[in-house]
Length: 460
Ligand SMILES: Cc1ncc(COP(=O)(O)O)c(C=O)c1O
Image (cartoon, rainbow, N blue to C red; front, side, top):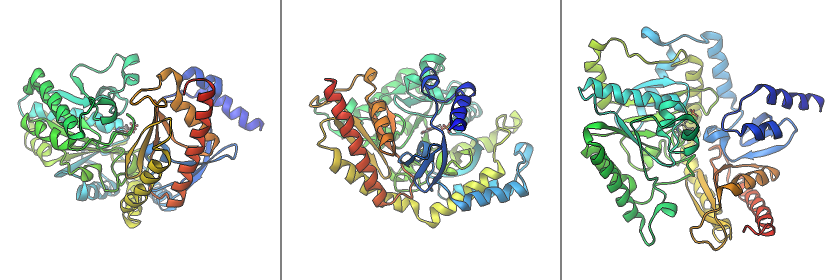
């Protein structure tokens, strides 16, 4: 017991936690995770949880996969590191790049490796700028993203992100990063507007923005196929069909941020496959190694690569890269992870078990007085809480109902993530139908407890 308290105290004295209230953490302390297997994670107090978030939307093959641990250990013994600057290379990285190019969406030609989704998106921004500099279009630099989008936290990636928390305290977004309305029909559509009408309006908004800024200044558009951290928002009917022609019309590159949707989550290899997208640049991370190692990639289409290949010589080397780009241990982890994803057909499994999750959540919750909307696709889902009988009314953020529910769910042995008033589900793709049933049952119990509390407080 003493040891546990000491460790928590040490944490408070020594760790600055990402996306954590500093004052609340100093008050409440950490939850220290200790071990995990499959979809179950256990903390140091011996409490077990179903991790319905796969960590942070990332442990796609589940916890405790010996094959990945073994591949990493073998590679660490053989060649723990060598860099990839100045034409240096290593076999796992080469094999991984070739393998990604086999089925990545669009017309992929080359892969650049980084360490996090943020860095890979940062790389995409720089690739877009470099591409237009090489094409003799130095004014064509602005990038359009969506409100609610999450693309990471480094300066460029945070500027792409459309979440106030990432901007307010840091003087962001940087100039030249613009945002259009998120495609959330439930929240953003006008009364009586169909999904298709809403999509068409969003495409008009995009086109008007491009024309207002001047097409000669707009370089790229970035989108997650299904928005994840912004509240789990699948696109409304006809959305990408309406958006993509606008991008093509004005010579605007399309960056697909596949950091969450890639590697099976929606029931297809990539989210772009679900929506028949042909992006010019594709960002992957998380599921690439199932987060057993920090690794990400910017996958570059022939359209962009052709310009770099043909026109970069006079400008010297590509002036971008990380010490640990194309890390051999990360690449070995990714190859073993992809073997599992393919060998166990986890994308197909996500389609099947995901359909069960979507049905069970809707059946269990659609009529619930505090549930505004249940949404999702494959093995990603969101349940948005809303005040009883309020139509599209919203709980005031200061009430923290999403966070309160996440805490009740922990008491039930379930980890979901609160995104404002929406609770997110993104379990490992190995989750079974019986485990999904257990997730939905625990969620229902937690929600009923919170409902009772809110009613007693006169809030619901
Ligand atoms: C869609 C998307 N893009 C990018 C990122 C950033 O990745 P990282 O946290 O590895 O920097 C995330 C992280 O959640 C994400 O969800």
